[in-house]
Structure formats: structure tokens, C-alpha cells
Image (cartoon, rainbow, N blue to C red; front, side, top):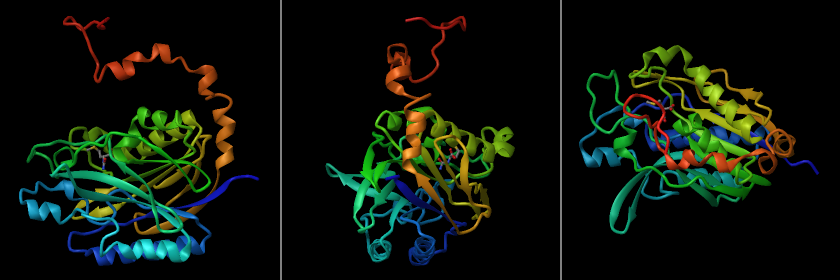
Amino acid sequence: MTRYLNVAMGQLGPIQRSDSRHQVVARLCEMMREARSLGAQLIVFPELALTTFFPRWYIEDEAELNSFFEREMPGPETRALFDLARELGIGFYLGYAELTQEQGQWMRYNTAILVDQGGRIVGKYRKVHLPGHAEHEPWRRFQHLEKRYFTPGKRFDVHQAFGGIVGMALCNDRRWAETYRVMGLQGVELVMIGYNTPVHNAPAPQHDDLSLFHNQLSMQAGAYQNGTWVVGVAKAGMEEGVDSIGGSCIIAPSGEVRACCITKEDEVVVARCDLDFCALYKQTTFNFDLHRHPETYGLIVARKGVTLAADGSPWRD
Ligand code: CDT
């Protein structure tokens, strides 16, 4: 029997700083209901989907910064999402800022969870590739302080859920081939990626006009080269004076765009994803067992950055 999974994108329009958790959760619940009425079994929400994208601000006050974080999941304001998921029989992926204690120390992560159709958390992912900068850089029109506010995650796990093998990533992760390949090597069939991508990239404004292109290019390459479905979902539009791209889309293992959002507002779009379609790529062009040469790829884990000799020529170990 073919393994079909009906997946919804729950794209969010902007969330302003004054919007309460209660208001945001109500929007998410409304999209969950719409997704279920359209036959979805799973809805993917964006990165940091409960608040405005606060890394755009340099925040010195700890209490103020912590107000953007969740100390428990579900918590008092987010429990409604879990209850509704259980009532409707729909799973969800949700990005949020996580504040947690490890060995008596407070830690902050940019996190996503996967919740099954019974309202149970079946997977947690902490963002590995944190973009931006760690110090206040007033020359920028707005900050991108993910390196200051979050600790990087350590793993790209996959989970057996929703009838297949599924994985999670967050925003900047989607630009890195390693993200998909590490999950591809675990047999991933569906990768969910929430994102917040400002149109303007301060260190490279030449990229601004290409931001939607780069979004799709990265996810299409990841899908095709690993024979997996990829679901990328934006928080889009003008948030606190900063415009972010939309362009949420579901990409097939062929690399083709199967469905996409067309607004920069709250929008639900559903696509039927045939998980067995992955095999057409995983067993042919991208049959890793047959065609990969890991003995030649050592540098990928041995080196972090480009290494050159003093005269600029390639460095040979
Ligand atoms: N949220 C996130 O990771 N955004 C980055 C913005 C560009 S880097 C400053 C992204 O890769 O889309």
C-alpha cells in the first residue's frame, strides 16, 4: 500500500511584539483546524512561531529576553495546541525559543518539536547552524543575534513517525548540504524546516533580490540529492519594520515544487506526499551504498573552514 502523508504548511504572517502568546496560539489553532478540514495529517509551523523574531534586537535585560522563551512545553499558553491536535487527530511541527536548565545552568536553544496525532511530543530538534553575530552591531539596520541568544544544538536525529522516517531542521540549516545528508544517511523521507528570513542581509545586501531564489534553491537541492520530501515554512511579512520572505513550499524528492504559499500572511496549503516516491531516488541516482565514496570525504568532518597555505595555495595535510 502506498504511504501517502497529507502535509500542511501553516505559514504565519507577521507577529508584532505587542501580540500575546494567547493571540498567536489562537492563529495557530485556526490554521490547524483549516489544515485538518483539508485532510492534513500533519501541519508544519515556522521557526520561533510563538513570538516576533526577537534576535533582531539587542536586549540586555535578562527578564525581557527570557519573556520570548518557553520554560515548559506544553506550557499554560501552548497547551491548547496539544489539546486541539489530539481532538482533531493532527500532528504538528512547531518552532519556539526554549529556556531550560542543564546541570544547574540556564540554557537557551532555538528549538522545534514534532507532536503526533495523539498530542505527544515524539521528537525535539535544537538548531545547529545559528546565523548572524554575537555582539551588538549598531551599523546594521537591525540585528541578527542568534549567536548571542542561543547555544547550538548537537544532533540531526530522525524519527519514525507519521508512517515514515522524518527529520527536523530550522531556517539557516536549510542552506547547508550537511543538514540533509546527515538525515539522508538515516533514511529520512520528510524534512520539516521552519524559517524567519529577513529580505535584507546586512553583510551582503547584494543577496537581497535573490533571497527567495536561495530559499528554494537550497531546499530543492537538499530534497533531490537525498531523495526526500522537504517542507519549508516561513514566518513572513513586515514584522516590527523588518520585511521577511514568504515562499513556503513543499518539495518532492524529484526536486520539483509540489505546492507553495502565495501570500505573506497566515496561509494553509496542503499537499499529498507519497513517501514511497523517495525510493525512486534513494534506490537509483542517490543509492548511497552503491555510489558514495566516504573514503574521499574525510575533509568534510576534519576541517571546519577553508584552509590555505600562507601563499594562498591549497593546504595539503
Ligand atoms: N532565522 C534564520 O536562520 N535566518 C537566516 C537569515 C540570514 S543570516 C543573517 C537564514 O538563513 O534565513
